[in-house]
Length: 400
Image (cartoon, rainbow, N blue to C red; front, side):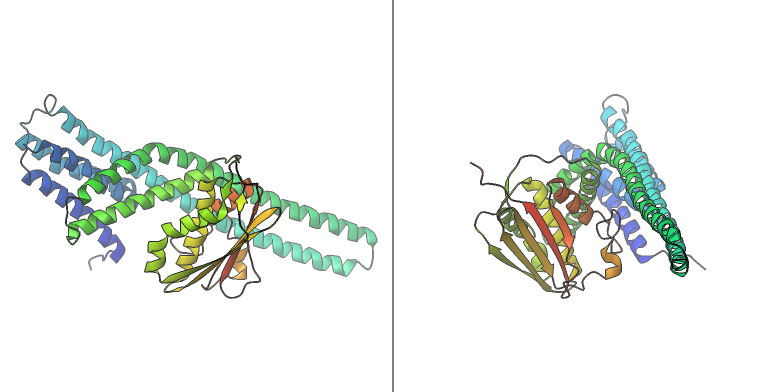
């Protein structure tokens, strides 16, 4: 009986093959006198290589680059004279680069996937260990209650044991965070060096290609998908770099209200598409806080995007800005399903996500940014009509 591939995997394979076929047809059917077009076409081959690397790992990236080499090499021989090491040296080296990019990006993507699997396995094992420790602690508590009437000395021993157990839990959480951040730092540095620059080239090339097609054409839609996927990959890299890096507060002063309205304007397409309404209430005049405006923008983007994604069809986001003598308070509430109490204590933990396809870094990054500027970000667990996050930032005088 033939093996049936999952539908999502099949779509990805067909999309990569379609890109290979489309780019190859452009090469073979465009006369060589249009050399500038061929320069664009041959760089477009990096797109399916990188997509295959992220979707299928090392074998996907390297296999795609080898396939491209096989179908592009005859074009060089037939249409460009076959002078591989003289007139066509750049095209020959491009074939070598195809395979180098396929090997590097495939290895990095596969390594990243393996690291994620290892972290999940480690987290599960730590959770089981923590459960056993809790069970043992509960047993010790029962023993203490049964013996507390007999000896005050045993009571003191129990208190010491309980304190040490809590210290072990705190140290265990710190070790988990250190291990994750160390691995994340190494991965993010490698990803930034090897992938971010090619992603910028790919996006620029795709935006050039987009202008070549009619907006109603299917190719235009494919290029739009390509640009969106490139931006998604770049955002993933940015999240890794932001969370792994060490942030230092500066002396910048931002207008919280201005930054918030700018973020709402940026998110207008997502709000319209999701049929989500935003209501903003302001109690004050200046709303100046001591925080970098770009970092504050990232905090608002993470929180509001989470709220939009939590409301699957439609809903409402209510934002309140309150200016106090010593701080600026911001409340962001949505009408989504809310966050269960069992998950509430973990939402700011790196890599923890309530969504199946979530990276688990958005709230961690937002919390880290706010804490860097001596502020606080918390979940209002008393709110029952959805989820509400509370931000407090130190206020600052109006800049001169």
